[in-house]
Length: 365
Image 1 (cartoon, one colour):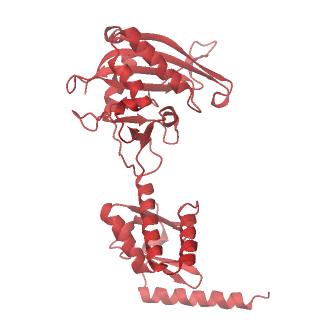
Image 2 (cartoon, helix red, strand yellow; image 1 turned 90 degrees about the vertical axis):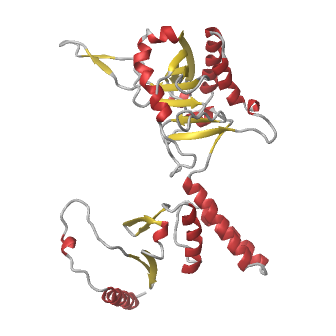
Image 3 (cartoon, helix red, strand yellow; image 1 turned 90 degrees about the horizontal axis):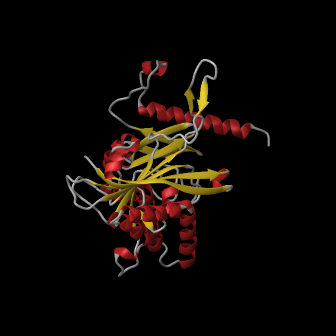
């Protein structure tokens, strides 16, 4: 996929102190048209980034809450058009600028807006308008940001050995914005853009205040579970308003708590019913749980079929069922085990629990 650059503006951002507390400023270095860009060193640095950015996959509902690449959508009030969104207008002016001076002015406006975002870092920023002539007559806008690399040196000679390089940048960890979003070659979504940054960072979210992002799959599933729980509570406690209110409050606290523990509220059939509704929408939905120092990773669809949870006294038991058992690298004597029948194991666990209860009862208070 080839992109032909029409205009490019090159800015350098300087940040002093922690998170820019000591001050921050930007400087415009140069704005070039396509011919000047092709003849410059910038072309060798950036050319491969256009196709790389365009081809980078992103999901509207990512599998985790923190992902490096996201699809954003411009927010507008009901009944209003896209041109009521300030972020869209900022990009639109750059896409339609008729002269190099006009493009430079709008690029400076974009960088100034970015400078107001929180926790930005020093580095180089490139605002580029380019066309994929194979597919479109309309241009795309790319915003590339390279943070300054720390402790970069150039080898000199036998005496001085090294010479520190100031304001060094690297394309390896380049952050980017592409507008409009291109879901597939030949498709253009003018309501959407694609951002790429460190998975934990929020520079572009702070910068683009009028862009929203779809919820991740875990967030959607959490909302669905909470909705199912609330519906169930409404039905069960329909004639008991005080108990219903108390139960709903407890469920709300549970849903938003950091620590996820077994609540012991529903029987297995209710849990399987709720899980089946979620699995129907997303069959590969994962479930992770931790039992003591052991971690279990499975599919939600496995619960009640190949994964079972039971209680023995005050302790929990997780039973896993499968056709084969494989081990990670390294040799362990467990690999030589001749498994005992399940009935025998259950009897042994019960005997162990009784022994522990007797031992606890014999302890002096």
